[in-house]
Length: 72
Image (cartoon, rainbow, N blue to C red; front, side):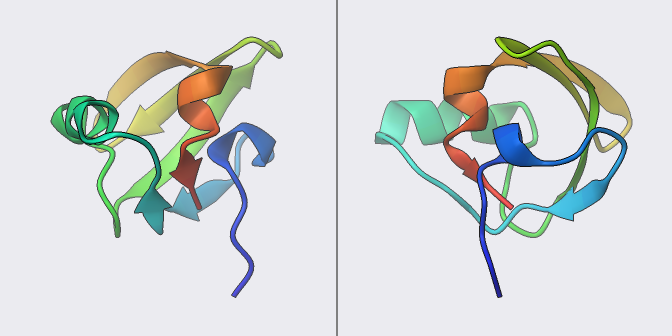
């Protein structure tokens, strides 16, 4: 299975989160937003420096640095 950062996922494609990289504080913050392994996430919009993603029933804006820590 190939992993890639969420920042490289195609807009509109559904992906499953495999793991979250980074320090504990970063992983905890993303977990509070719903980014946990096994959860399905979809990139709604990508302007290069920020992404809008749909996770569960919410849309969340994250920067590319955070998106690079989310492996799908």
